[in-house]
Image (cartoon, rainbow, N blue to C red; front, side, top):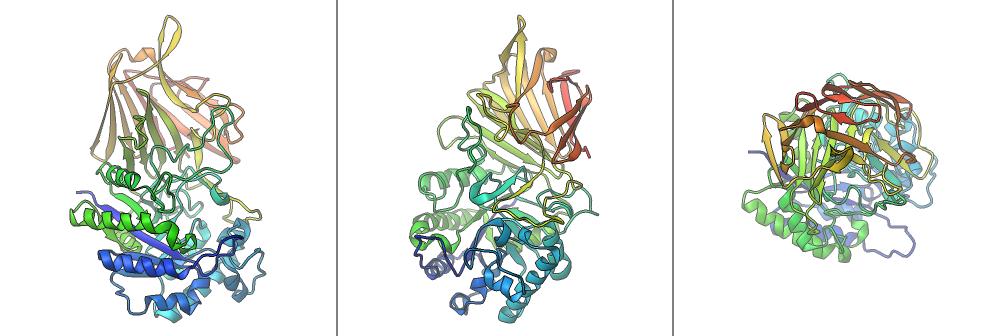
Amino acid sequence: MKRQIVNIINFIRAVEPRPGKDINLVKPVQEQIKLLKKHELKGTFLFQYDALINPVFTALFDGVNTDHIELGLWLEVVEPLVTKAGIPWKGRYAWDWHAHCGFTVGYTREQRERMIDILMNDFYSLFHRYPKSIGSWTLDAHTIHYLAEKYDIDALCICKDQWGTDGYNLWGGYYNQGYYPSRNNYFSPAQTSEQQINIPILRMLGSDPIHQYDVGLNLETGAPAHQPVITLEPVYHELGGGVNAWTDWYLKENFSGNCLSFGYTQVGQENSFGWEKMSQGLNYQFEQLEKLQEEGKLEVETLGETGCWFKETYQETPASVVAAFTDFMGEGHTSVWYNSKYYRINVYTENNRFWIRDMHLFSENYHERYLDEVCTGNQLQFNNLPIMDGYRWSGNQIRAGIYPYYIIDGQLVPLTFEEIDYQEEEGHAILTYKGTVFGVITMTLAEDSMTITIEMNADQVVWITKYDTNAQSLPQIISATESKLQMVYDQFEYTAFEVLEGSLDASYSLRAKNNQIILSFRGK
């Protein structure tokens, strides 16, 4: 039986400098501790450095059961940490969320190491051990490698995929669950043991698997600069974790067992939102977690425990699935996210049509922007290698994707279906679309390949790639031969995929051969 895991992770800041906010930062932590005790659930609290050195916050954990409450670090950079490291502070406030000052990417490699040593040693002086769990909205490969080599961390957690939110652009990553990062790009799983950092990274916040990806998309103007949020965070009361019915839907879909390896999500909230805004949603979520754990439908454990289990269970990044076959919006949409160490893909349905909404290649040879450089702006960006981006490549009335059509009298007709089926066999995710004019169409998603099988008259079906040619984030297509698609993105050349069965034409469209299309994603 596949494990279904929840980490309750709350992180603690000691200051809230944003204008117009007058928030009691202690009360949320007190109440979160009470909730864990009341429902007998395990949880993880992560200290930002300003909270770590403030006895008001550390005293809240005097006498707690350390078997149930884990303490770790939240690695955003704050003024007292920088000052102690002898580095000039570039922020506007003691905690400044801008990328160039608030995250490790805003500092040199040597400065990153110096700050980590201070964090770890000050934590040790308080708790007589080093932390085993660390989180942040984003990190960097050098920092993670340093943590792995010197401090033997068990687990890391980072933000979900998002575009523009708070200026943190994390796009094209391992969509949920966990992975072992590359030494060159922490946002990409490693493909080889030589380039793998052996700390699992788990994705936070519990994204709506159907609607979060392209929320806010305008087909005329494209993706907005700042993407809205639809997640399990309890502070979102219109749609998300502050809506009880949405929480029920999310937990049901996310922990359905349709996950290939293991199901995962993170529950919790940072204290800087204040207790009043999070209390209703968090109380309800804790009630449901206690109930579902008693029913054997999921397990609540600390971040460190999940990291240890991951390392004991997987020597390399396991393939995983996040799927939703019912739509909270009642619009009949479905979404299947498949992730492996080679690629990610999203197969989406709407109005009895199905298409590939997203496809990104992972390569351990593609370097993140801040591996050797320092971020100097207010925003940051981590990404992987795009093959299809249904969000950022949409616009001018074009919804980007790879769509199946068939040809009648020289006209393209959208391919529709009547019923969808999902199965998992031998480590593969298998999507079956029934009731098409060509019989059953099956998509088999494997670790390094995708196979599309069309029951009959497959030569009449063509998979057409659509995107706004004016999109700023497009890669350059070097060549689209019958058997290979070559691209350049961010000055990095890569084989998007090889066509092992079927053919690719110059317009970037795919056709079947012997009733099949087989794509390999082992490109370099």
